[in-house]
Image 1 (cartoon, helix red, strand yellow):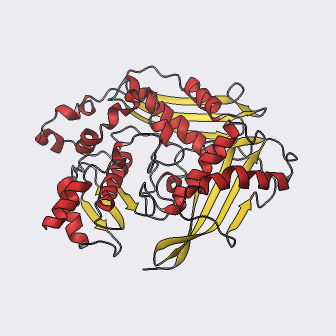
Image 2 (cartoon, helix red, strand yellow):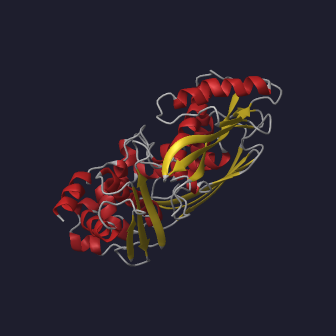
Image 3 (tube, one colour):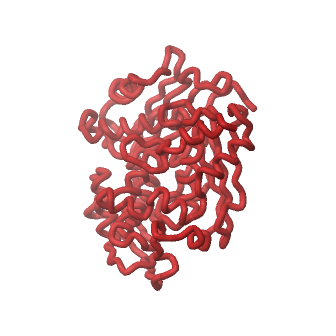
Length: 400
């Protein structure tokens, strides 16, 4: 395994067209589940120029104004361009209401173990969960820093510290690893969306971004840019983004949603799906297990693989890899994970209480996750980020 290398991860702001689509899709999921926790819904969105297209299939009696949801998200993000804003953009919808499926309207908290065993996924997927000890939230350092910079770029725009910025933006962070540990910041690249191409000057933009975005983000980081770090701000010159310049689509930023390509992900979209979709909730369950393994001190890195087949309740494959960093062998950790985590679909719903989270967060839960990653969040309480099994895993490993 490679020990010394440079690894780069990217993030984008909430105004990136792909992320605009993710947020609209997940806002629709939130609205359905807030009113009907047992709703089945799949929502996808595409945006280009001044047009938003929404395709949704659902099984619920909830009345949904898809157009209103989309315009609300466009306004929240801050699009106010003459060519694209919440008032003038055209919105096309293709809703398809299907009959209620009574078999999916079960209360997982009231089920017996035998009843949970009878509920199998209706989709097939291999999902991955990953955690490492690079950061306090147990995410790889490159994606953690990329998300921090993306958030800061949005913050200085919203606070009007840099009033010439628009919602779109792209960030890439390169980290140099030595002996597979983060050692230094190799590069930081930020592409900021400007209201006007001729204002401010490129020299002022680069100075402003370095002072208002890059410097504050690294203030509390143990590894900071040094004199050899490449700091690139709008390296191709002035940039204008958003839907009037490039299109967007739900589910196109899987690496940004997960681990920044430092670890594997399923390739399946996380946004726009209700909580009976195993490709979404399985990814959360796998992350929960991996994070607890690292929090327990059983490994510096951990990847949990779960493979699901249609109609089969338990994962057909459960694999744990620690990439040579485990204090006990991977087979032993795999057995511990199997003992302490329930990876059955209804078991995941019961443990993480996923169906009821939108209502508990006033109708805005999954939408929040649709930008800046589904893992390692510190701005919202996520049940799959809890390290509630770490002590038990540590004690059991010591006993073994």
